[in-house]
Amino acid sequence: MTPRSLLALAAAAVPAVLAALATSVLGAQEAAPRRRVFPVPVLAYTPETSLQFGVAVVGVSTPGGGTDTRPSTALATAVYTLKSQYTLSLWLDRWLRDDRWHFTGEVDLFRFPSEFHGIGAASTDSSETYTPQTYYLTASAQRRLSRRVYVGAGYGLRHTRMVRTEPDGRLAPGTIVGSRGGTEAALTVDGVWDSRDALYMTRRGGYLRLAFGVAGPALGGDRAYRRFGADVRGYRSLGRVVVAAQAVVDATDGTVPFELLPRLGGQNILRGYTEPRFRDGAMSAAQLELRAPLRGILYGVLFGGAGAVAPSFRSIPDAPLRASGGMGLRVVLDRAAGLQLRIDYALAKGGGGLYVAAGDAF
Image (cartoon, rainbow, N blue to C red; front, side):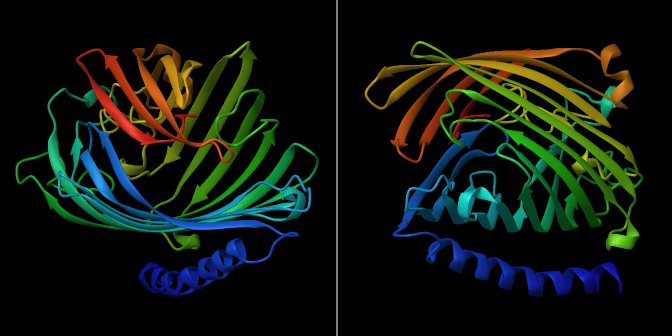
């Protein structure tokens, strides 16, 4: 079976599976669940996209019957940006009774003109513009082994068509991996330890995820590579102030398309640098936030972080260290569910940026 036929098969099958899960999300899951379906206007801003606007339809099922099961969520979004970028997506997050099983799935179609600064030491302050169109399908399942430990596996299929590159740019000759587009398929196994008191607006506890993935022709892709990721977070309440910390590692080995290389920057990791600015074979970063209530539904946040990219994980200690920091506001939209609007301004060497998004950065 060719990658294209496999993509077509998955494109036909995955939406049906996700639709069934969506029905399950909003259907009866425990005694007297609380179910809500509501449209939400989308308004966001990042330096990479400029103003984003659109609509999201959210379905939330909160279990009843006195169980500890986490809320299940279905989310369909359509977003357009002032840089002529668009995204259509369906995302599902399903928890079974007492969190014994956790299922996620996603279908995306996006066309995002982006910037290429180079890779690693060849990265420059100047950039060139390119336009990819991407279809992305993914599904995963996790099984609860104990009160705080989960193990699972997931499969992702991504097909990219390169719509446009600059005629005299570095991507035009097609020598950079992924500059002609292609299909990537990966199988990932992971383990999670999670003691957080809540998924959103966390006040105490910890989180650790370790993941290892392989990609290659045998799975339906064009290129072979491996990926290792680690994400550790800790939360502690000091009176009314919450101290939140995160450290992440993302390392690859093999023939990785440039768009999938580990990155430093964006709205969640090292805000202040644009997401395409620094990319290489490996990335490591750490960040800290102080979150405190101000008045009513408003919370204030101070944050800072540092990180580096390098050709491999072993060479990260020798790579230049990048740092950024800033402050922001949180507007609580639904205290019971922990939903909030994030407004951050971050400063970094060479610039900074305004970020408007949903939820905390981590």
